[in-house]
Length: 416
Image (cartoon, rainbow, N blue to C red; front, side, top):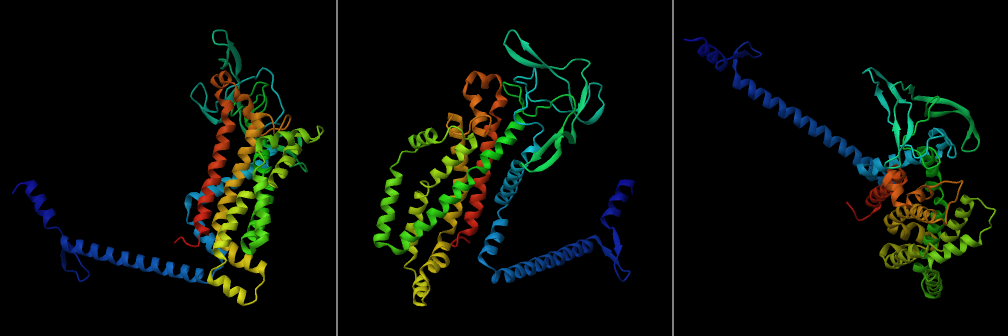
């Protein structure tokens, strides 16, 4: 017998010893593995089923808000969007600390500087912590565009965390002397600079505070008016419904853009840009509740004839109690979607008006005012980083839409 035949015969008749010391063939080992795998799988399924039963028992007597929260957390995309949205608002609230420079700080010879490249390896192939090179702007006589030139003897400037800066106040009342990151001796432009040599990233972070926060008051006021007046109109009907609906018809007939222009001209000239737009936002919130009120009215009218509403009336429940406890929960999914769409709608409205010169004005900044420089096609073609505020705007609106989808599915009483 050759060596190969001997090895084949050994592999074929390979034996092991079982618990009694008796020889066990390879097929017996395979059966043991399959049996053990089946036992482990059965144990895993049993443990998983037990955990699911425990969760069902905990949620059986849970409140409506807890059920909505439990279902919302299962929507992974909506949960991740909510986390990113909270982080975006946290950055906006701490803009003075996150932004490396002030929104009005200018740097000489830094007009239309391209985004700074962050390096980890120097020109000799050595690794370092994140740093930037000293760059110089040089005008190309052929294209009349500024180009960043890195000299051969360029100095390295490391990017450090919690850099000491001149004293400032976070949110207007917290004294600080450090910023999140920065460099010493040479500016770092993560998103480039504008026509006056100001850091676009810092201005964008400061602008997010205005664009993300200024519309919340108006959205809240229009939401309350729409829900209250729409609920009253749909529940009571009769002459109350007629009065509210004729008021809605009158408000809807007012053209929106001329109203914006008239309010912009009527507000005192001494007010700042933020005060002016905040006043316009509050006034328009008083006329922006009509669409929500009509939808709430229609849904309440369809729900007021249900058996559980009739039972509540027979049990001598008050009108406001019936509206609040029995009718409005039936339109919760729509109300949630309305809020998540109204806030980005207000953000888009501010951006549009500021872009047209009717909203926030200098020295205050918003995403709309930053996009004013992108009106010229030539400027955009030569300096595309000026469109960065549009990317932030799209990102914020998409996050709101994802969160709205998750809340709608979680609050819908008819979804499974």
